Amino acid sequence: MEEEFPHSECYRKALYPDQQVTVDVMLDGLIRTCRDASIFEMHEDQTSFVQYVQLFGAADALQNSRFLLQLTSDRNLLNLERRERAARLKRRLGKICQYARIEQLIKMVKRLPNILFRWVEDNLIGTGEGTFEIGVDPMDAVSRGLQGELSSQDIDAINERFPRLARNWDQRRFINPRIHAELRIILHLSPTLLSGSLTVFLSAHAVQRPIGCSKRSCLCCVLWIDAFNSGTRMLWMTSGSHGKPYDNWALPGAAGEMKGVRAWRRFDEHVIMGVYTRLTDTLAGVRKLAAKRISDEHASSGSDSDGSEGAEDDHIGKIWAGDHVAGLPVPMN
Image (cartoon, rainbow, N blue to C red; front, side, top):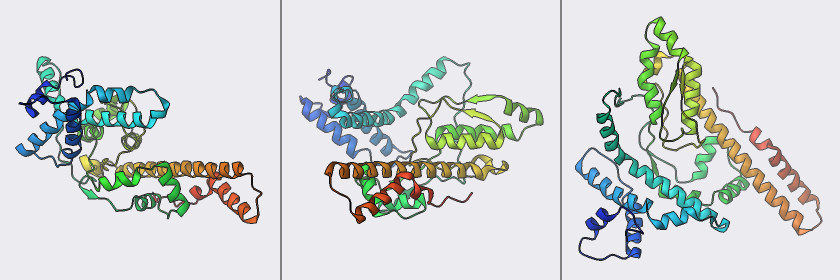
């Protein structure tokens, strides 16, 4: 059992103290626990602590299991989608377990007392943080993001390109946007640098200020940092970006005394425009794939074209050229 689920002895003894459990039963229990116990609101109370401990035990055992290792190590191209889904599951399990490492961080800091540190616990006001219920239809959200109606062809193409979109959407009807760690650090430290003396102000612009992170920054963080650096001429930076947007990213708004910066509204607007561009680029790619598939089907059929098919080909050609994308309304600055 230890070979199948390394370092899970304590978890097994706590969950199955008086019985010999099989691998199948253990694996089924881990999956069920991770699925059912992951939907709860965290609060600073004993109930939330117990819930997290239960979820952590299952997540830690599952992410280290030989079962998940085999799925993520499978190099058979026929199982590529399964391997990608398993890798995504392992990353999410790791995110659950990362909060338990804070204790290790505190121990390391105590062993190295000369390292200066502070906990950033600002209660930011004026942000886009909160809990929001999303709409029933994901296509409505896409339409609002693009500020234009989707055609039936667009909807079919999106559903074909992202077949799990509707199911994933139904499983998560509430989102909780939060200010990401990189931006919290900037919002915490920048006001002092920007409001100091002229000497401090000038030196703040001449120094690169790297932010160390456990992973690369998301699309929205990089867009906001770029706009902030441009508006303040400061040089905050991270190790790079993986280019992915997240639905739990909150607009900083006027938080962290940003109203003291003349161009603070442009920071959020720059992010909104960047996400809008990503949406239009993604839709353009989906349209191209759909047009190519239809074109290939016509070519493989070997049938002669009549007037109506010519009109359809002309319509596909316009989609390929991106005329529909170019015609989408652009958000106002």
